[in-house]
Image 1 (cartoon, one colour):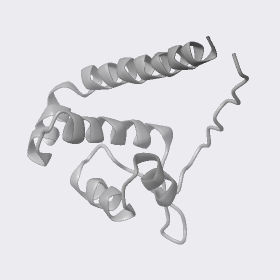
Image 2 (cartoon, rainbow, N blue to C red):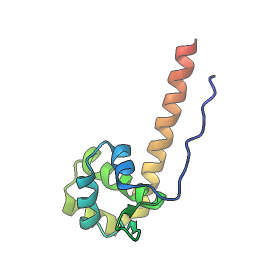
Image 3 (cartoon, helix red, strand yellow):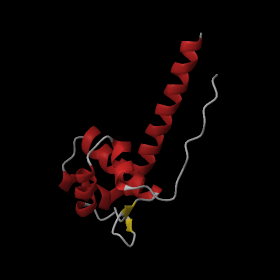
Image 4 (cartoon, helix red, strand yellow):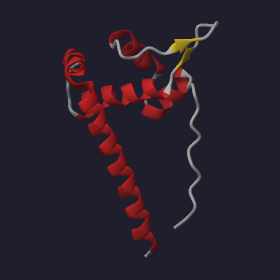
Length: 111
């Protein structure tokens, strides 16, 4: 199996880095920041947003519920109030399954 370098984990990510992670415009990230209470990026002296890993995990939850589950913004707000931890666990399982799938595909290609 080929060697893979670990991804570099930073303490803070810029809004452009976060937008690139999710394949969206920065305006969509700003809109979600204003809409959802769970997104609270820090701002530096210049006013630039600094997203933490927790913010990115919260965005994963939001994007999952909107894009994959087809929920409305209002529905997502209500769902987050009811069971945010349950949704976060589900998304962690989905992410882990996706990484396992990638590994299995690599192994299959090597055969």
